[in-house]
Length: 238
View 1 (cartoon, helix red, strand yellow):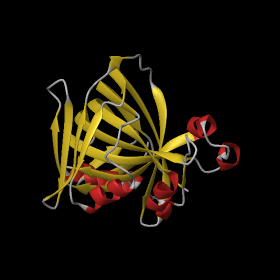
View 2 (cartoon, helix red, strand yellow):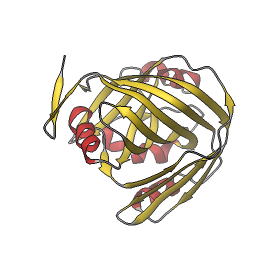
View 3 (cartoon, one colour):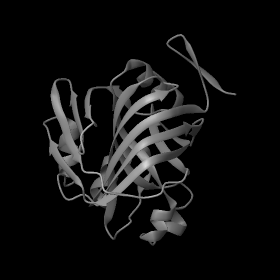
């Protein structure tokens, strides 16, 4: 079993998250603009609609897991997995079936998970102020970095749907290396709705980047998972 020494503690793989609340919303954005944003990764966005890519905003309350308790916000893009571009060149459903998530920005509010995420998987974790308000019917996340507002995101949960355990593939890029991270998530209390999100952007550079992608705009789909469990395996360098 692989393990890593993080701040004097041994963390073994796969890393387990036993209880978390996960909220996410997806936005269609211009594919050329999204390609420019993630060009450093060497990956290509998935065009699930002609000329359109998918940008996903995620916030998570990790309540019980191997990396302790913390809050997290993420900006991700659906990408074509390396080696599938030839079969996915037609875009549309073919791209969607082969898509994975490239994690572009991933602030957290605790240093232990930041160091673990960086060293074990190459996640682009950095410290920020993340205010999660999850006890009301609306789910809200406010992110500030260096005293500047990045985003204020409000989600309205939708209708319940079944959610079996599903494999997930994430890609990361750090120190010039792109990595593939296998994961799995299962959950209870899953709700989905078309639209369902409101965004207010601040004056941080990430906010400017999101505005250049066309946000704020109507979301494509929003999802909330009240009780999620996850497993993260060892990263593979590409």
